[in-house]
Image (cartoon, rainbow, N blue to C red):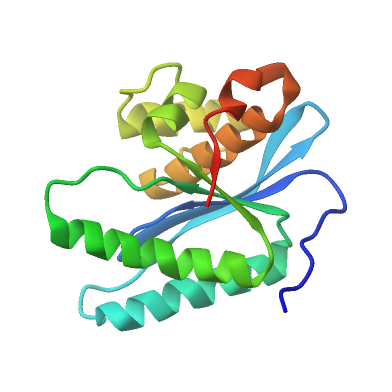
Length: 178
């Protein structure tokens, strides 16, 4: 039986930009009318670590983050089209490891296409990583620009919070439940 999700307090999002070697993560919360980044980082798995061990590390990190920050929802980058099937399989496995940890905690999980996240944060869907990182820093009043993988996760958190805010109803239709 799954534990009940944390429904008390303000909306708090566990946001995930999955990858086998560098998974970006963020905890973003709505405080009044402002989005606040509580924590962010990158789960870095060394190149010599076996893929199976990488997946275990990703799941372990997310279980620990969920226990520490008690998010009440999860936002994750949707699967994107990739030309290499091996890349798609690896990305899918990393997503799966993160999603299992979120599902075990009873979190509702929402997917966001990369173009929609960029649109929400930068204003255009074809923005590059440095533009996303710059805007994330500005929107969240961060003291420094986060690494690209963490910035992407922070952007997913912003997209979720803005999409769940009735003042920004246009984004709400972009989320789909897993």
